[in-house]
Length: 128
Picture 1 (cartoon, rainbow, N blue to C red):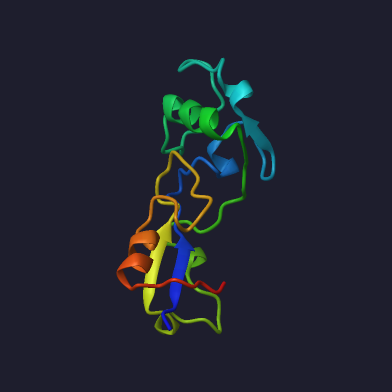
Picture 2 (cartoon, one colour):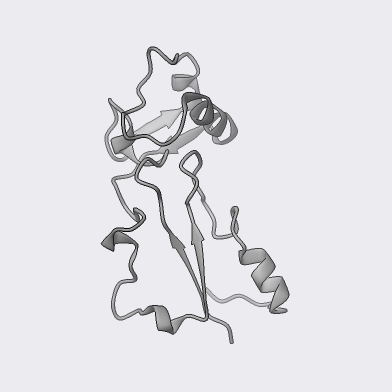
């Protein structure tokens, strides 16, 4: 049996965090229709954002909308640590997702090595 920990580690300026917008709160929804008219001079992107307006427009054009979240799982903060009783030693492999500031990783397979890891280890059944 192989145990894999897929965890999220967002940069502080991640596209899914409400604090990276000037007029948004946690659990507000931001849509492509809303931002497509934004300009570099007039938009709702906050100062700590680590994504550009073109990156935001591209992301939202692909997904349609994003529910914004409160700050969570921010790199190099206690929020990315496992919650007891889980410990890093409980897992054989650690996969990190959500590190691209300009897009949300909805799955552990999204832009990670998870698929390749499972293939390499000849894993054909997954229990979650």
